[in-house]
Length: 532
Image (cartoon, helix red, strand yellow):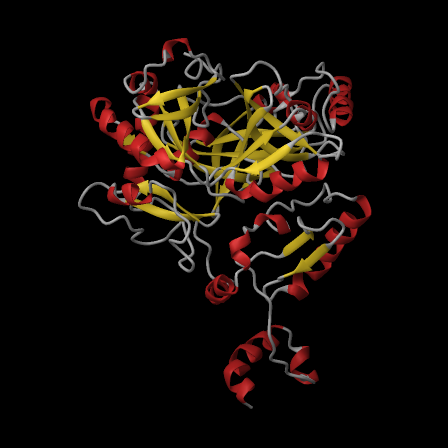
């Protein structure tokens, strides 16, 4: 009786949609416990701590709907010893969680909120409220004083955007259009494009890989040659033994036996597990999680070199793209790499956490001369999306190959001993040559209407027919419209003619909005700004 009083109205409504159930009736009402996870997605896959131990749990009250699919995924995973290549598992993989998320107190406080979120509208800038302010970077109080609006980034508190002085940094109303913080976000984006901006990227996953065989080990995992000269940072991919994507990261060779591997926050445990499971007992290699040992600040924009030179005695004019070196800033020594994820001249600084505030204060104080602007993850996202930079786990995943993602340039087929998955890349490369192109390929999409927005999941049409969906998106303040990345799939080669000789539209809400599609980056396709 108590159960029916609480659920009767909803049960009758559901049964009225299937009238036959009204005459059949219900044999049994059951009210029992249900499993929920910290992010509302299932926990699926091989446990990172124990090889050959597979998990399929935490189905968040929709187990009847998803149980069949989850069972299929796990069965194929066990059989093939790797995730299925036809289903994206990055968002449900067991290794996406951090250890503290298994704490009883964390689970108790988070699960109640997750239950309430299950059937809500999921707005693009929504951030959970429970279990917050427990994992902060060394700069947190400084950034809070700069009026940052923080969001949960794999448990870290990270600025999404900054409000001007005197304005409270809150989202006034969640929606899918132009939100109240849009002009603040735009100013951060344009400051990076036109001047210089500062990003706190301390949440990035960082691993020191050291030992006599560290270079050989990382070169075996990496598509690029990461074991060249010391003082070089290399953008590379890691593939699995079947040639599908596993990680998207950078490797910096600091010394002959010392490397720094940097990956996105969501792939922390995935990258760590990938290394550990491919390390043999014959290799002299030590892997250390250094994420909490180094704070990270990115100084990006056309005037970043001038600002950096005013902070250090190191000659920044003799520091080419992809260089890495230890430099002085004030009383501190930091690892500086010249690399970018926004498409501008810029530097990434890895700072021993004990020196973090000193370095930050030095940069901000000197930055006043150059009108330095703090920028958050919203600006980072729109900047990288204009440049078409990829992000594993968002716009590319385990169902994709390196060539389909447009990352063939990272491959070194001539290095000693090759790399894991190389034979599959070469096979696809030969097939591409024989057939005149790939039939699956990643492209950029730019809406023609500057007042419409993209988030993800919008369907792309070619000549009136569906051909793909937007995997990730943002607003291109420099391009003048919403911009996203999508994977096209066709029964004919996808080349320049395929793109140019077609009418392209994206379904936004109920409207088909004309758009531009491009194989090359829409912003600075020749990388002139990066290598200046």
